[in-house]
Length: 121
Length: 178
Image (tube, rainbow over all chains, first blue to last red):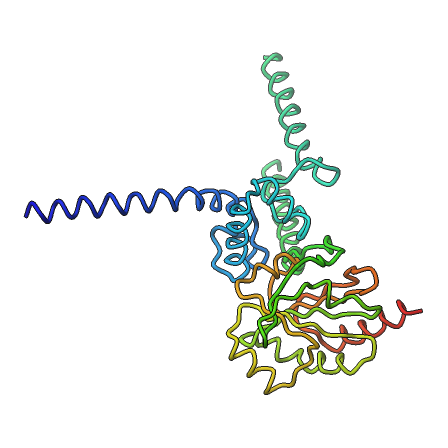
């Protein structure tokens, strides 16, 4: 029984070690692919999707990471091919400025309304 | 009276929203990437299907003609539909059709071309789909009309070629040549 336990310990340590080395790289892949829109199955991220497109995309991201590219370089690479729409987190530029500014305006406007109402009372 | 107007306003408002949603249903809600990538990456290297030699894409499109880069797979049904158009395009002067075999088995790909005819001047393979992403593709079938002179993509066709697209290709080439 003792021997069996010992073997089990060794086995689990090996597994843990294997897992941790593998996880480092795939964490990065997961993080990036969660922020990418799958263009085949819209409404899903590349991370969630099992479509051919998404699977290849994940392989490509892995390759790029192994080449030493960082997150932003990968986003730029993909934006260059597919347009800004592929990332869930849009940058601020001419086309997306309204997207970023409108909530702010609404927030300030609403705040003013509330303050006015309260101060009248 | 007030209750009545409130009721009417609510009904009108819900009708308004209903019609907006109804309109929204008719709109196609699939986004296709705009033609953001204009230049073909000439340094993209792919393996050849028959002899497994590595080829640079730039080497294949270095004359003054036009190329159609067609991404296909033997398991893809729409690819069978468009195959006749590719065979027709092959016969057209000043067009070369380059095939990229997408995530396919070699034996199936070769059988597909043997059964239906081989329109491609060169068949390249993309085993894991990453090369197609480098080209900006989202799936199969997809065809790019490329001007070999400046290595620019004139038009991207997502989905199978049909009569309309085929005629458009011929027209574009006619106009660009002059």
